[in-house]
Length: 426
Image 1 (cartoon, one colour):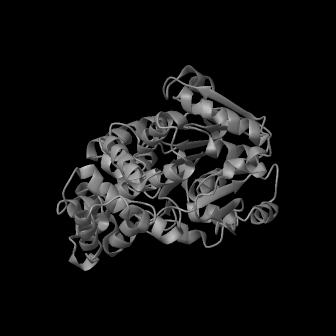
Image 2: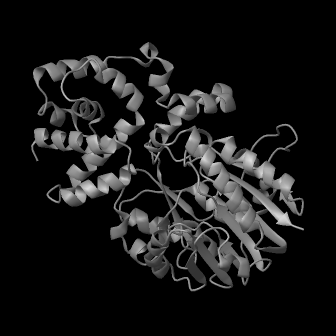
Image 3: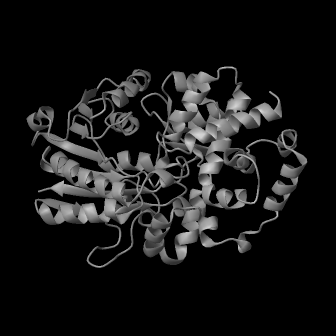
């Protein structure tokens, strides 16, 4: 494809994405369906250009003001995710001079907002929470995430999968904390691999794997994944149960649960029972009250811990949506807790980095539910032989002892931002 045509496609796609009326990945996928003439390399350039602009939107919009022509074209030039020589073939002499001037701008010349590239409300929240670490965290969110895999231990061993990946020319490293994870760089086409087709591997961030490990579901137990979504953690939990017992995968979205079916078929699991529910007080929930050994609540949240993968979220969320999520999280956690029988374990988790969705929810639940004894996450992970478990958890603060909560950050741990709290019903 001629560079001018490719740049025009980038600008046209950006015009749709920057309306923020739908998730960016859904808009990109729809654009590809509508433009089937685009080859794999062109699709890659388009997608990466869009995500570069979403990551650096504040900086690029500031630089774009000094250029001319349609705004989306200027942003596409700044974020163009292919060879600069290719890009040059699409630019006028004036645009080349403007881009050269933009490239010469140093970070030291920029305002903080153009360095951290966050909406001001979110920057204020994070800076209050993190202090001197704020800029390091903000910069980590600007970096693309590595590709983490979970090895399905029902079908393969991690060392054998690593060898098989190496034979395909895909170098990988064991993830630092979970016993099932492998980490790759780049974005290889995994779906073509026999390892994937046979269900030996699933794509899953190591932080997400840790949530399944923390639930510590055992053989023969009754377990609920309360907000299962497309089932990544469901599959990890089912494998840890060694395909025994009964594992319910509940979600209010039947569409998301449909996406679990092909993954479930590949996994070899037969103990998983997906079920769409109307809401957290559904009759199916009431019938299981007091009967369940372990419940995972990976609650709907702002997703602001996943900005490396989903940079559009920082521009789509706002304080009002976070407050709405907090209300929903409180209601879901209260309903899920009713499922537990005495001695049962409850795990509450989010992929948010905001205390309003994390510690505030967990602390309020503990006050309202004295029958649930909080467990120290660092101690649990140490018992599960996770190395340096204390480094994955929150420090002491106020009345909360060190290690009470899981708190993972991309700058410290190389994972998405995750939070988890654990209780045992007495």
